[in-house]
Length: 130
Image (tube, rainbow, N blue to C red; front, side):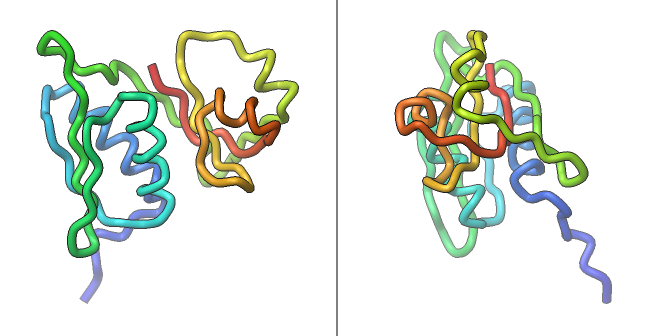
C-alpha cells in the first residue's frame, strides 16, 4: 500500500496551504504537526498573521487573523526550496528593506527578520510574508 500523503517539504506545504486558505477566505486550517511547522506558526502568530495555534493529537489547528472581514496575510512567497536553500547573513538582513516580513530558520530557532537582527543571528530564509 502506497501512502499518497507523503510531502517532500512539509513547511513549504504548510505555508502554501496557509496562503490558499487566506485567498479562499477560510478561517481555519488543520495540518500535520512537525516541530518546524509549529515554530513557523508561532512566529506568524507573534507578528499577528495568525490568531491562534493549537496542538491536538498530532495535528496543528491554525486560525487566520482577519481585520475588516479581510485576511491579514495577503501574500506569501517560499524563498528556500529543497533544491535551493537561501541563507542570509546579519549584514544582508539589515540591508533588506521591504514592508514584508522574512521568516528565518536560525541556530536560535525560527525567527522573524526583526528578531534575527536584534539577536545578531543569520540563517536560512524560509518565506517572505506580506
